[in-house]
Every structure is written in structure tokens, then in C-alpha cells.
Length: 88
Image 1 (cartoon, rainbow, N blue to C red):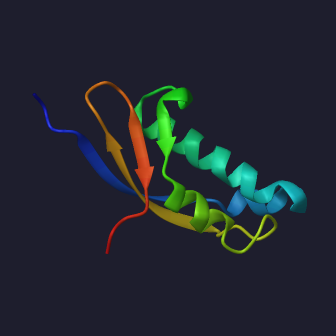
Image 2: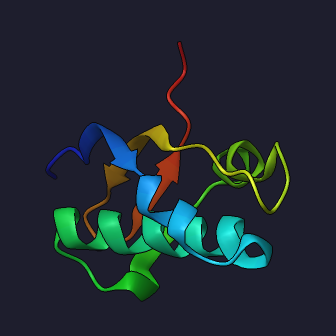
């Protein structure tokens, strides 16, 4: 059995600021999913985002998501990828 692959990524979300104010946080969540799927080589359906990451993006409301976010990404043997906040 191989160990799960683990990375800590900083995902840029600055481009989300160009989107409509009423959709920024939800677009930021889609951007996180797309970024992780591209870098880990899995389809977007296999990316699971933890609720702590969701709460961090939505903390300041729908119109003010963070400009970048640091996440811990774990890819398991079956191809499922988990995205969570790094424990510090």
C-alpha cells in the first residue's frame, strides 16, 4: 500500500474579484475545486472540499472572499482528493 500524497497549496483567488459581487464566494469555491483537480490530475467530481475551507472562504460574506487561500490537499489511493485547511 502506498501512502496518500499530501501537499500544501496556496490557491490564488484574486481573479474572482472581477466577477459580479453577488457570486464571488461561490465562484471562489469552484475555482478551488478546478485548481486542485488540475494540479492533482483528477476529475473535478473526485475533489472533496472540507467544511472548514468552505467556512474560510465565506467568512466575510459572499462579496468579499479572500484573495488567496492556503489549503492542505491529500490524494488517496482510490483517486479521491480531500481539501482542508492546514493545521498549524
